[in-house]
View: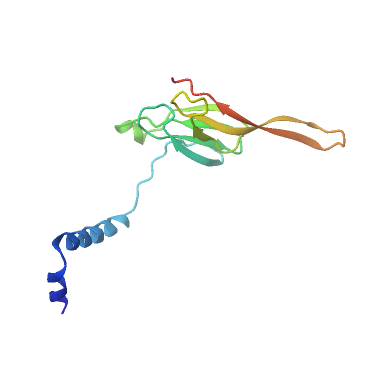
Length: 140
């Protein structure tokens, strides 16, 4: 019965099933970990976008312990991708940075929010305000 079923299945479908099973077996092999950037204390809010327009996804990261907004730049093809990636700190105190073209010039800027003011209010409690800010991409 199985032989008749197998003969009735088109060759392309049979090939697809065989390839899918082979891919499933490959999926369970261990993945090798590489460090793109090591010394964040608490890395959070990772977003990927090609902010430098080189064809590779860069990453915006928030280091919550230090309150730093950072861009980690993908180094491109070749062996450099397995080494530490270059990075740039944009500023302090932030939440997730969202990559989008804020000013309409064709490159990706980063939109986020920062805590700008911190002081003791009239009632003796600490007061802070958050502002929505965007970082203009200087690469264009």
